[in-house]
Image 1 (tube, chains in turn orange, cyan):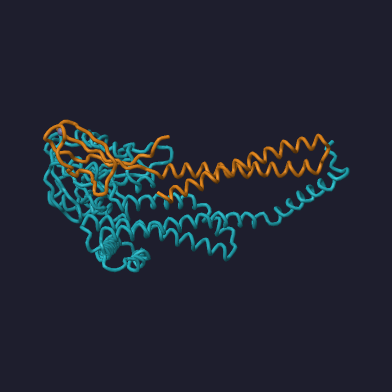
Image 2 (tube, protein in one colour):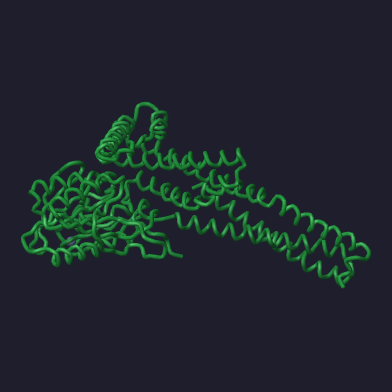
Length: 128
Length: 369
Ligand SMILES: [Zn+2]
């Protein structure tokens, strides 16, 4: 849990930093236009090149963060266990527990006297 | 207009254009070298990821062994030996009889692995030993991938050979996909969750429910039932521990018990889909649907052709990754579809009172009977 929190803290810091760089670069480009109209050629080139580089770097870092989020999302799969009663078609879905297996008898059906068996165990990726 | 040549801006303009020319020449002369460096750099990233996955799998294996098996001493040294285990395949210059040699070799390997795992985890029951064995196999596969990739990476860096690196670079995405699937497979094995490959046993277990079961060679359970007036013999590997058993031996034994009087063999298995195809789709085919090194398929083909028994295959499509990852919903829900296809097949291709063998092929982890 603490590791997860540290991970998300790092993630927010990275996003915040990239956005900061992006904002600063945008400001540099705008100010370069101002220095061009004022005739300060050296300032113009300097801010323009730096601004463009900053935009490129921050955009690439943001896209790579986005890709990493997608990978993490794909990895966080949830496994579910389906309990089913043959007699009255009672069905219950719950989180998978270690020791579960398909065809395992998990006791009596809460609706009738039939046996409750695990009919399926499957994994699902959370939808967004 | 921009005034590149006058005043202060002029020197910057000259500098920029000189740099442009310089980098242009640099790329012409050393383009391949630069490409090589970037490839090596990419690869070292991939290698680090592989190393991480391999270590994670090993940590998980040790943790699970300690939890379930409660060994008296540290399992790590013995596990390390097991993770470097290799198999020397028989000589194929004179291929006659190679199947039985390979079969024997696989038996020896299997026994050795199970015995070692049992020693590593003395308190584990039979199903848990099987799960742990699968887990060790997964770790071993990741370890092997890591060692091979590292070998070519280091060799490429040492020789600075563009083509050596290029070869690795070309297959790297596929290798990484395989490794990621293995990494998630080890998690399923550690917890005893069904994997995509378990669709065959899942179908068989649905047929076998409430029926009397008996064990046949090797690690296979068999049940007899009637379906539309036909006598159906369903078989699968014994669960819920991770196991594939030897369905070839079992099918041979069943056919021999009935002196060849079997009308049809239906095999249900997971099969690799092409990119773009839907996971969980069911296809029909002819022939023995079973993977592995080929020894089991050989036995089934041999026995079936001896008695002229038709062998039909029903496959559930999934990617190589999905086959070893925790079973997806689409795959689990395909089981009923497979059973209805089995029924149609039986109705159309056999007469009443005839015997049909239905074999659920695959790893039965997390699936009982
Ligand atoms: Zn009920």
